[in-house]
Length: 377
Image (cartoon, rainbow, N blue to C red; front, side, top):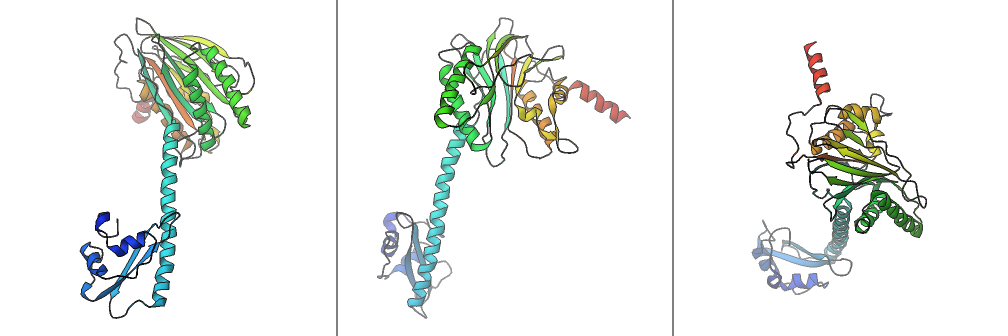
């Protein structure tokens, strides 16, 4: 590939082939005519022109070849050639750096893609909703995670958590944690015991690498009922309590507690069972939501109470819309300020038909009524 025109390798002029192999050719007969035929010398009268080829130095092999041409009123003397060589050296270094950056960027993109949260696997009678926003705008990855795996008995194991730290190191630890869960859920599906197995695996990993990292997490198993409801068996490892949006419009805080994961052997794991009727939703979220700092002064936390108010009246929302709403109100509170990783997972019991009820509520009813009163005033 050149600035103007493309030639297949067998059709390259001999002088160009020599330059690409690292040599500086001296036999330049017909080079001007061949370069012109390739479309490489637009605007130059080739009937009276001279050319020169110099290799562009690279790491292991030339990064390319530099072709220069001008009118034949003066041949390239030694000073001209030295100048061309100096330019070629700088151009080769720049091109080599660009190629190295491209290769590193491709590796980084591949690794980032492998560390991104994976959308939950489809589950019988469940509608999933997710939202994710990493702390560092330049990265697509962070320390929050969620996901699910299908169980052979028709149930689904799901999780949402947050590892200590931010950025690439936190994302790598998150990847290790997800890999552990991928393997462990095949040998143990009871949430409390599964979380303790994960704790042991993380302890072994962090001690081996001297990382001293830990995680907070909610892990559960959802099993469908004939009426379209779901029974959620939840285990907590130091994470924020989930919320349940009842069909009546009430929002319940699930009393789920427990100790951090990956800190001590045999931690105390909180366990609770939640029954979802058709159309009801359980909401899980990371501390990037409740600890988001913003408001008028820019340093006030969003807090659990504002989250409760934000989801009040959202009981008819599909799970994806609910997760998006939580992310949106959090980002509105931040007002483009710095923030921690934000992750949201919503699990909605879809009912016996396998579909959540359709609705037109983009704004919770209380908020909509308040807006109406303000407009009327």
